Image (cartoon, rainbow, N blue to C red; front, side, top):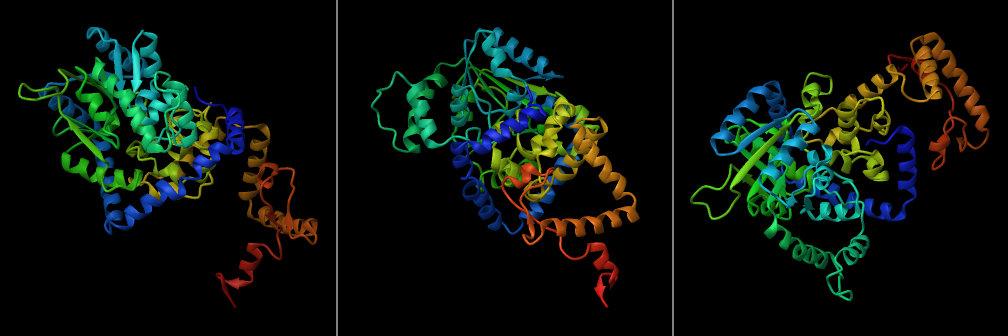
Length: 475
């Protein structure tokens, strides 16, 4: 369920007033942002890698159907069973049928955004199955009944004190007076609790960062190793991935991995980068006896044929939200659905429709920080601008905002009128501000002026100054 524009405003206000959330979000600039900056600085050819990564994603999308067919052929030859799902309902049905055929009772899951998108956990639990998230952040928010607030760091909105309190509440079988003095102790406790789940699970579900058509391989990246345990210990492994995750060759996958890790967490390579190709062979010491790969469309084909096609380049690194001033102020939950931040402002309207999500592309300063760090150079600002235009065309937004935009458009397309109004505005604004030189209150900018002042206009307009020069050069 996506938040409405009104709910988004309420969510944003609540987030700004939440001191604990603000404390948690304050770690981003000195954490993931600083780590990315250092990692990129250590690779002189990083901009070249970004361009190569963009080209790989574009070329793959140009021939997506062929690469998907090649992947299915190779994965099947390697012993996997490939399933196709047109939408969320179809994907949930495929996974449920596999679990029923295996008489499964317990499922462990690696982190997967598409499983959040299709509501997989709730559906499986409604079928009487126990589902345990094995990623530490996902495990924490699952127990809290929350959605992820970030693509790669789902519990980034929580502080260490929050997690300690939650663990004391969740793990009632452990001594109440046990010490939990630091993050290491919390991780150790989670490891002990989850290990029994891994060993007794019937099915393991993971997502996929990439699907390699050349080899029929699924690739996942984690920093905890939980994905490896989720896909090797249970007897059934199910990969759930959207169709845009396919990449033609291992060489191209390696290029994408080089920009993914550095953009996401500032690492040269994620701690666990795992390649899985089919079920266990006769000579293998471990691994699942069955491997199923569920390829989910759920709107991607429509996006491929639309103006939002470039968003399908996304490799889910989270860099755009780490650097976004709006996300840094309100966190991920305020956005109301699975994908927050700038990429969410593009993906969510594409998947759910702009009518109920018009607030998302408007929740941006258009500063361009997201584009500047995107490892595959998605033009996020222009895509958000396109959604704003479509929202306006469809009549979304308040009557006041639409009326103001219409008046602005009327004046902006009539240069003589625009220049006249600009001169009047400068003169009137300067007189109105009197000696202060700034505005602390204006009827149409209450929200903006709540936390800052606006400088009052002074002197002449830009057009007047331009006319007093020759082509912008002082005479």
